[in-house]
Image (cartoon, rainbow over all chains, first blue to last red):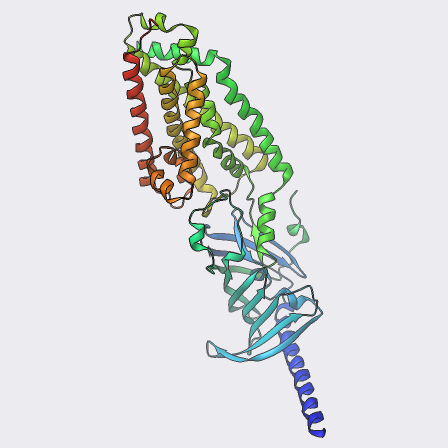
Length: 225
Length: 279
């Protein structure tokens, strides 16, 4: 009985310590972005989508804390939301659980693998992040949900103005079959041959000309009527 | 002489009220469509947003004037051929029903000249109609809904950048004109066989609709005969929105359409040369 109580106590302590460690890492991730009040950046990129031809992405992104953003582009674009915030939305919530799953080496650097699960039963997305142990940036992000399927995002960072770790490149891989473009022709003779296959889509974005903490005005984010 | 004959034929075409049915229909339909799209909001964009989930953002004005122009150009498959047939089916049969065959053919004009003039007048009508169609389906839509990239949501989703849209639409309208010339040829052929325009109009549309259905049926037999049906090539305008544009395929379609047009013209000519106007 004593042994069992000891093991149980050790397990609870371990889980609690895990949670605490994960939270500490998350706090450090947030600290990276807390110093960024606003930014603007130009992006270029391309979308590889099976059965779709989408021209080169070209846009300017404006972001202001806490969640104002604007994407200025004359062209049609599909971009992941994380390409603007650089971290998963769940980190903005208060009620979520985090757990360190382990450590792994990426580009010869130790990375923590942290699982984030919302405590809200209506949110079914599970997020896993790979966090750089040196600068606490999110190197990789994995989002899984029944509606979106699996989305994997990778960031490649650069140190700007001697203060900010910001991505200079981002790639997102997703299940293209989960994204349904409405089509005009209902019947496609070739469709039957493709059904059942999981096709991957990929978005590549490169960031240029960051302007950080220049005091972006609110009117930039007002929608034109 | 031929120019005079063409101008006579054009006068006869544009004197009849039925010639303006197509123009009137488009003038009513397209403003309604533009109003519907602008009021109904970005239905397409909403569907896309919903399908993208919370993880992706859609940027850009997808439901714009070009998109409306692309929706309206779908009418080239059935509706526009009908309006063209209304006029082309009357080219020869109209003479029969009006009893003017004898007056026309007993004059010192070669029968071949009459056939050529009627065909050219029919082609000019098709050209005027396509130009009107192109203008009314693009300019008002762009004025009210703006411009942007064009999304072509067919079997393959193609997003055409705004700087490429102009020449693609011009090519599409030109391809439509070639297709409509074939419709004129077929309707004129049927028209030369009878003395009432209803038969050629219904006959031409029946051939087009049946061929289109046969060409789309997903059965092996119909898939085999599909390449031999001229209707398969009548949708050549769609190729203007492909990426990259397959010009060899477009030229092949033009060749098939023009070849059929020449065949229909030749049959009309042979038939008209032997036509008994004394009955």
